[in-house]
Each structure stands twice: as structure tokens, then as C-alpha cells.
Amino acid sequence: MQFLIGLGMAVAVGAFYYYVLYSPAQQNDWDKLPTLPEYLAKHPECKTSDDENAKCYSCESDKVVFQPLTDHADPRYKHICLSCSKILFKSKSII
Ligand SMILES: [Zn+2]
Image (tube, rainbow, N blue to C red):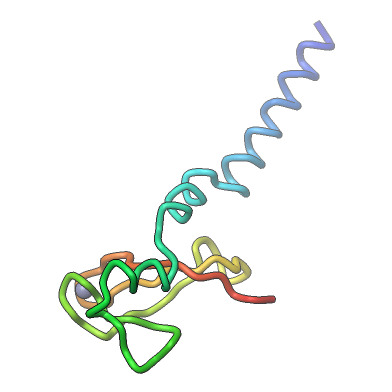
């Protein structure tokens, strides 16, 4: 019985770290986003003079902001259109 309780605790702690800290759902969403070159290959009209940014393919706004996927220490960024809130592409900060 002791063993089962210990095992249950280990699984609970493992699940906590897996779902809360690693957050596979967010990682999955992020994996599905195109990178900037992929995005521009798909939407060549969105290219701007800025090599690190692009326009929104949906509303053509150039107000695209980026934010970290989870918190400020997260090197994974998603780039979002300020006008229509679409998530356009992803990037990774180099640390
Ligand atoms: Zn837009």
C-alpha cells in the first residue's frame, strides 16, 4: 500500500510538472505555427522592409507585435496582429 501511495504521488508530481511547466498544449500550438520564412513563402505579399517582421495576411496591418509563449523567460515567441489578433508566425529568441 505504501508503495502505491508513493507511486501515486510521483505520478501526480510528474503530471504537474508536465502539464503546468512544460505545457504540451502550448508547445503543440507553437509547433504548428510557421516560422517567418515559411510565413512569407505562403504570403509573399506580407513581406516588409523589416527582415524580422511581416504584415498580417488577413487584414494587411503592419502592426504585428510579438510576445513570449508563456512568461518573459520563455524564448519562444508568437507574433500577433494587433488589429485582428491573429497569431501569424513564431520565432525563437537567441540566448
Ligand atoms: Zn490582422
